[in-house]
Every structure is written in C-alpha cells, then in structure tokens.
Amino acid sequence: MTSPVIPTIRPARPEDVPAVVAMVHELAEYERAAEQCHLTAEQLTSALFTTAPALFGHVAVDERDEPVGFALWFLNFSTWAGVHGVHLEDLYVRPAARGTGAGRLLLAALADICVRRGYQRLEWSMIDWNPAAGFYASIGAEQMSEWVPYRLSGAALRELAGHATTAGTRMDG
Image 1: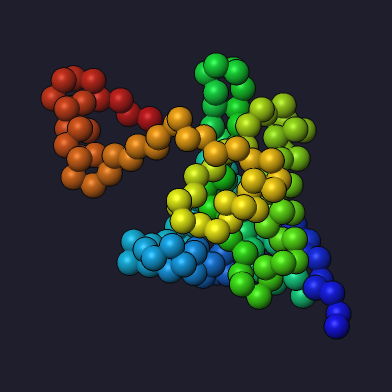
Image 2 (image 1 turned 60 degrees about the vertical axis):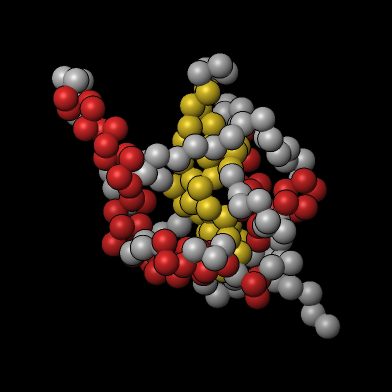
C-alpha cells in the first residue's frame, strides 16, 4: 500500500477559482445548507484578485497541481491587542484528500502568516456538530464558548440600515 501524497499549499490563483467554488458548494452541502450557497466564479475572482483584496485564499494541491482543499480568509483586528489577526472563513478538504495532512497544512500556512506578520490570532467558527472539532483540539485550538456569534442579515439588516439614512448618519465608504 502506498502512502498518500502530501499536498502542497500555495496562494490561490485565478485558474483555481472554479475548483474552489465547487468545493465551497460541496462544503455547503456537507453543512446541510446547499440552498444558501450562491457563490459564483465571477464573485470569487472579483473578491480575491482585485487591486486591494479584502479576501485571501490558499489551496492545497495534489501532485498534478489540482486543488484538493482550500482556506478562504480575511484580516480582522483586535482593539485590545492592537494588531490584526486572521479570520478563517472556510476550510475544506475534499473527502479523497482527507488524511493527507491537507487541513493541517492549510492551517499551518495561515499560522505562519500570523507569526511572520506579528498577528496574534487565527480564529474561525464552525458548525457545532462538525467532527473536525477533535482535529482542531489536537492542534491546540480552543473553543471560545464564552463568545457567542451574532448575525444581522436580510430584512433585519436592511431595516437597521434604513435608520442610518433617516438619522442623517449615512456613511459611504
């Protein structure tokens, strides 16, 4: 029996976008929310490859340079620490590539960015039933149970935004 090929991690390239979009949709299906995922190749290309991107991506590639996993991330900022950090939006490794170290290597690449740039945190959220919790604990990640995520979207987001306009506090840019 041959051992699995260890993937290579590199920044995402424009030619990786279709594979990453497909994997985002695979992740949404895995998380039982396929109907909520509307990402297109055009949207991801625009987000990743603009002159001043707010989103960044890395891919795990096999020996043929084909993406088998990805990490999409952006910068956050800790007002308490006074420095940026990395927020991992999504991490996914295709089932056939699991067990190759791709997930660990993707996280290691982001940790390396944090260390080299002086960032103090690499953070992410995950769905509570995800079996990856054991993997995250094995690399030393701590569950932040005292911090509860909130989301404002849809009609509630638009309603609150309407108050900015009526109160004369419109902030463009």
